[in-house]
Structure formats: C-alpha cells, structure tokens
Length: 257
Length: 221
Ligand SMILES: Nc1ncnc2c1ncn2[C@@H]1O[C@H](COP(=O)(O)OP(=O)(O)OP(=O)(O)O)[C@@H](O)[C@H]1O
Ligand SMILES: [Mg+2]
Image (cartoon, rainbow over all chains, first blue to last red; front, side, top):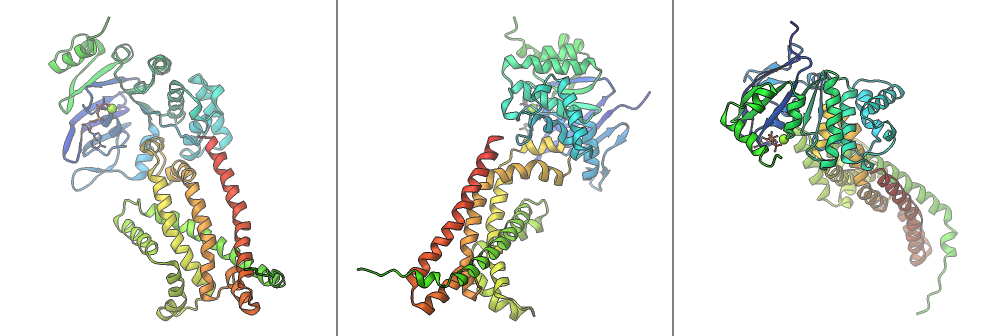
C-alpha cells in the first residue's frame, strides 16, 4: 500500500505553557474526509493550523507523502526552514472561517496570485486557470469584481477556488460556514460536497454535524487535550461510546426537530 | 501705515529665484526618495524577528525623531568631517539631515500601516506557500501603503518645507536665494511674500493630485 498522504505522529501544542493537545496521532490516506469535532476551545483550529505549520507544533512530527517535514533540533522539537514550509503549504491548501481574501485584488487575481507568485506561472495562463477554478465554484462571472462586492457565501467559494488552484493534495477547512448567514451556508456546503464527490482528501473542522455525518469518512472528536474518540460517522455520531462525545452530541441536538 | 509694495525689485531677480526653485526641488526629490525608502526598510526592521535588527531600527527612529533637523544638518556639515575624513557639501548635509529625519517618521508610518493589516491576510498568503518576502511585497505592503498614503502625503509636504532648513549651511535653495535678494535690495517683505507664494503654488497642486490618487485607491476597497 502507498504511504499515507499525511501523518501526524505525537503532535503536541501549547501556548505559553498551557497545553492545547498532546500526542495526536493521525493518518490521512488519499480520499479520506476527516471531520474534526469538539467543543469550543478543544483545539480544533490549532490542530488544523499545526498541519500546515501556521502554528509551530511544540513536538511531534508531520509527514507528507511519507516524508517527515522539518529537521530535528537538539531540544527534540522540529525546526522548519522557510523552503520546507512553502513546499508543505503548496501540498496542503487551507480555507479559513473569515475567508481572508485579498481585498486589493480582483476575484480572479485572488485565485491567480498563488499560481503566479508561488508556482511562477505566467500571468495570462494563471488567469485562465483562475477562471476555470472559479467556474467550478460557480463564480466565473465575478472574476473581475473586487471581494468587497461579494456576499459571504461567494467570498468563501472564491477562497475555496483560491486553495484549489494550487492543486493541493489535502484541503483544510476551518469552520468554513461559521461566519455565514444561515441562508448562505448551503451554497458553500454544496461546493465542499462536490469536492468530496470528486474524491478530494480533506480535513474539515465544522459545527455542522449533519454535514459531517453525511460527508466524512471518519470523525475525530477532540477533548481533554487529545483525540478523545474516533471512528466512522455511524460509530461516533450515532453510537458514541464515551461520555464527553455523548454530552457534545446531546448539546448539539437539543433543539433538533 | 501705507507701505509702498515694490515687487519689481523681486522679479528683477527672477533668475536667482529660478535657481533657488531648482535647488529646492532637487533637495526635495532626493530627500523624498531616500526618506521613504530608508523609512520603509527601518519600518520593516522594527517588526523583524531578529532582536538586534529591531533594536537598531528603534534606536534609529528614536534618535532622529527626538533631535531637531536643523541641529542634524549643522552636525553633518560641521561635525561629521571632523570625525571621518570626507568632504560634506551643503547639499549632502541637507540630504542627510532631512532624509534621515523623515525616514524616522515614515518608518513609524509604515510600521503602523503594516501592523494594521489583519493577521488573516498573512495567514492566507502563507497558507498558499508564499515566502515572508512574497507575502510582504504582494499582500501586506500594497494594502498598508494604501492605508498610509494620507500620512505619507503629509510627510512629503513636510519634507518640501524642511528644504528651507538647508539655507543654514548656505545650500542654494529658495529661501537661501530669498535671503540674498532681500539683503541686497532691502526688500524682505516682498521677497518673503513671493517665496511663501512659490511654495504654495508648487505644493498645493501636488497635494491635490495625491488626494485624487487616494480617492481612486479607496474605490477598489
Ligand atoms: N495564538 C494563541 N495564543 C494563545 N492561546 C491560543 C492561541 N490560539 C488558540 N489558543 C488557545 O488554545 C485553545 C484552543 O483554541 P482553538 O482555537 O484551537 O479551539 P477551537 O477548538 O478551534 O475552538 P472554536 O470552536 O471556538 O473555534 C483555546 O484555549 C485558545 O484560547
Ligand atoms: Mg476554531
């Protein structure tokens, strides 16, 4: 069998001595769609941000395509060169809760920027690629608008196109619909669903448990500074074994009807 | 009091004034370019992850912000040649004094602009695989500079007016020429009125243009 696309071994992160999580082991194979759930503050975003080293893990290893990123220092922690990080991040795309589009660029330029600057693709070719990525998210006609003219849902779809344009092996989504009006959530989830159907590998932090249930191949529930419970959506969401998972799901389904 | 204005005595010397204008513009352009560029570098230095770089940049800013430009020009002109064996012309002394002082102020402007950009912009750019320099050049600086254009305009106007300080070392600029004309023709009222007017006539259109630029940039946000 080929090596997993992404492997986390004993990942730990703390902020100023306060531990968020320790000893996280996770293996992501091609086509896996892993939904990361957990209470607020359980470290979901931090875990995701450690995967592409927007936060530097305090210890543990990240391996992409079977190769460990970074080099060991004497302290045991890994050190990452800028070059290694740029390579890693091209393989691992990220979509943020707050979209983080570049406001001084048109939509097409937002999507083309990484192609031009990071991949060194010529402007006109990059634009072509950008427009076809925008087509995938249904926004080709907005190519020459500035982001400020878009709705939240459209902004997030552009952000997804921007990540897709880099042709990453894995996509990270950090609560992609949490900043949206309820009416706009659907259009973003549809795009993610479409990516799932194409067999994209993704890690998704979300509070949309129903969506996680339908779309994920595996659920990871974070609590008590680690992976508290993991398994198929049916295992974890229908038959949770451990108390905090049960509590979390009960809280989320309180007003279910 | 009825003063008999006599502008003819000024305009007879229009050639001297023209030379002064050229001297002022030359000094302005050089100081603007050096002041803004050094300011940008020092401003970036103040946000460096390396402590010595940060420390040096801060020392630079505090030193030049808290000493008078006039004293700096005099120091570069009279004192520097004692320390190092170089010849310092009035032009060079004025450039050093005015540029470094403006650099200190514009460094603070650039730093403020860069700091005002949401961390999410950095993160999005980094997450695409950009290096620090690429993020800075493509994402952070273009947005920061837009935000600080009004402050930079003020700086530019300030530099233009500071050029008159160069007359203290007899650099040939507008005020220096004016002083000369006034002392030869005993007409300070007319001379200094004309000089003030020339400054206004040159500066005001420049300021209007930058306002227009600001408005155009504001439209894309
Ligand atoms: N940059 C930071 N500096 C200090 N503490 C941080 C930082 N980022 C996160 N934390 C802390 O780490 C813990 C985990 O935060 P994180 O944002 O990962 O949680 P989360 O599970 O994503 O929560 P939410 O559902 O609210 O988004 C929290 O206690 C948070 O306060
Ligand atoms: Mg979060």
